[in-house]
Each structure stands twice: as structure tokens, then as C-alpha cells.
Length: 455
Image: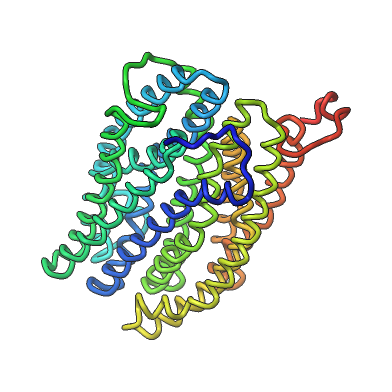
């Protein structure tokens, strides 16, 4: 049964609605962590660094799924909120077909450019060979990755977040089981890790495709549609912020890899890989909440229900404030046990990882608010502001910090980069949230200001 998005959501109801998406993000982070464990423990630290070199390029291609999923979800939810479910279904079908075609093109492009890209980033010798062996296999799975990312948000738009969670569970189990079989008993090394990851992405993309292509209990179903340039362009513009966000994060990972290789060598890249596994796990709560709650804001924006929009806004800030503090504290407590779990065989790498993780965790109390600001404007169909916030936060603030802080503080400065970058980004997020509050209505303003065009 689909969830009624038109009703009032208390704090408890909001948490229950977003819980499947939060759990989905946690499960995704868990099997990513397990993937890292198998690579680190049974293949070695060079293989772990190699995965971290190839993975960002894979994610950059997969961001098409984020763009169409988030941008399309906002449009579909708003259309449904206005009462036109038939048009919402046509928009859904069109966007799925466009995404699948784009996935094939992206995979071909990735296969042609992978090795030159890895060489350009500084991978050499065994690091280059292992990065390429891993990357070439997961690049073939790019269409499935795009579908997986896209359907994760479309499940929420369809009022089926629990089903999306179930698909993630199945995909995660497939990844873990295949990693174990291919890496340990079959001793296939990094190739086995790549096959396990690619297969899991195929599971996560194909199951939802079958579900939506068949008769189902949601209001969304794949069917006949017609070309609608406005919907495609609006989706691209609206979802561009999420695409920029994920491309930017991948570019930042590349920047970290380049700088860490220069200042700290392969151990620095391996330590950063482990920190990213842990950071994804702990930030999954904020990211899952933001992703899960956005369709509710889109629906109420389409319905012009400002009272409920203001309630959702206030509740979201409370949840993210608590989550950020909790994630920071937990990271400080579990940094050493996690490092020992992954790389306990190397004392120097363990100590470096613990030290870096505790510094890196300074980003967590503020990160959720910046994620929410970007997602908020995507939900309100203002992809331009959303993309600007992400672009400034990641591609300007964080990359600048990654390259400038080491000039003053050496390799130590790299670990502070994320936390330093969040501060000016948070100020910009607050500016736009405050400046546009009257236009969108997620915060009350005096009626005179609204009439004078406060937005």
C-alpha cells in the first residue's frame, strides 16, 4: 500500500517514512564496508588504493542516475500533488527510457577512456594495472548502476520506500556473498571484487525495472509515453544539483588521491579509502533522511500547502542537528576498532587511519545541513540554486582546501580540508534559505514582505 503524502507528518511519522531510506543507505554503506574489508584483508593495501582510484570514475558515469532520479522524482511528485497522476506516469516512463539509453552511451565512453584517465591521475605500475583491471569490469555495469540510483528515488516517489530498501538488501547480500566466493575460495583477487560489485549493481538495477514494468500496487508503472522535451530539460536542470554533487564528490576523491599520493604515498590513499567507507556509513543517516524526506516537500510544494512545508522544514533541521552530533561522537569512539578491523595487519597504516578519521569527523556536525539545503531546492524544482550550493561547497571550497592547506601544514592539512570547506558553504546555504523563504513558504514571513517580492 502506498503512503499518503498529503497527510500531516509528525516527527515520529516523518522518521517512520524516512526510516526505509535511511536503512537502505546504511545497508549500502555496510556492504561497501564489507567490500573494502575483503579487498584490504585478502588482496592488500595496494588493491584497496587501486579500488579508490577507479571507483570515482565509475561514480561519475553513474551520476546520470542520480540526476534523473532526484530531478524526476521532484517533478513526478509535484505533478501528482497537483492531481494529475496520468501525466506523472507518462513522465516516469519517459525518464526511465532516457536513463537506460544514456547508460549504454556512458558505458561505451567509460571503456574507451578508462586507462588514459587512470594514468593521467598518477596511477603507475601495479597500482595502474590493478585499477584498470577493477575499473574495466565495473564500467560494463554502468547502465545497471544508473538504473539502481534512479529507482532508489523513484521508489520513494511511488510511495514504496520499503520495497526500495528490500531491493538494496538483496543487492547487498549478493555483493557480500560474491565477494567472499570470488576473493577467498576462488582466489580471483581484484577481478573477483570487481565482478562481485558489478553483479550487485545489476541486481539493484534489474529488479526495480522488472517491478515497474509489471502490474504493481504503486501509482507508477512503465508504459507508453511520448517525447516531452520540457520534462526532460526540467529533469536535467532540476537534478543537475545531485549530478553535480556526485560528480563533485568524485572529483574531490580524485583530488584527495592525487594529494595523498604526493604527500603520504599509497598508505595515505589506502587510509583515505577506509575513512570514506566509514564516513559513508555514518553519513548514511543524514543522507538517507534528506533523500527520503525530499519527495514529501515536493508533494506539498505541488499542493501549495505551506503549513505542512514549514512543519517538514522545522522537523528536518532538528533531526539533522542531532544526527550530526551523534555521528561525530561515534566516529571518535570507533575510529581505532574500525581501523584495526580493516588494516590491523599494518600498525603504521592503522595509526594513520585513526588519526586521520578523528580529524575528518569534524565535518559531520555541519555536513547534514549543507546536504539538506541542496536537496531542499531540488525538491522545490530550483535545480540552479541547488547546483550552485553544491558547486561552491565541493568544487570550490573543498578542492581549494585540499590543495591549499597542505602548502601550510603538509600532509596533515589534507585531513582538515572537508571540515574547513563546510564553513563558508554553510554560510551560503543559510543565505539562500533565508533569502528565498518568502517565495517558497518553508519559513513564515510577514505578509508585506511577501507582497513586495522578498524572494
